[in-house]
Length: 169
Image (cartoon, rainbow, N blue to C red; front, side, top):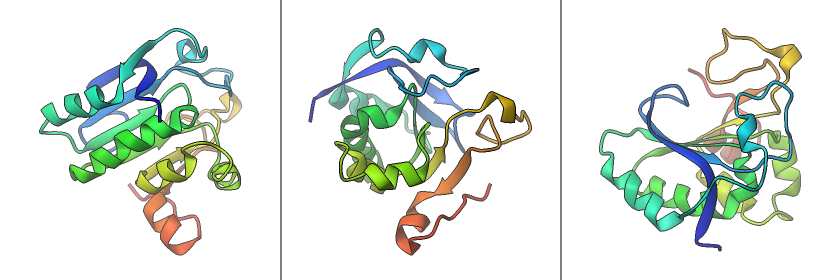
């Protein structure tokens, strides 16, 4: 695994990127380039900043009031190996992990054995917000997602039962 991850930014204290008090990591680079994306500056795979994953874990430990982390982007599955490492360390701290992806869970499961780190990353995710943002399905009343095609998936229950289980707020 590469010890550095390219991020467009970090928000160390967020209450809008999942339930509770969260530390948010924004991946730099996204192949989806959804029309109307609220983070278009993260689309390019260039730019952002290379950050050591060990330093990120060390920084997260400083924030004792956290409920968890959120992996966002860009596309966090394009950096799955590094996010899997961070998520594993965070879970060991007793924190939860949310991940936002433009891929659907079905796409992730289809390619999980072919894409580096995908298998490892999904096993540490508690809530997966999946699906590309669709501007024509925009709905401002939705919690933690932007368009009606996107789902909040309880990943641990889904992996346990083998059937998609939606996360209940």
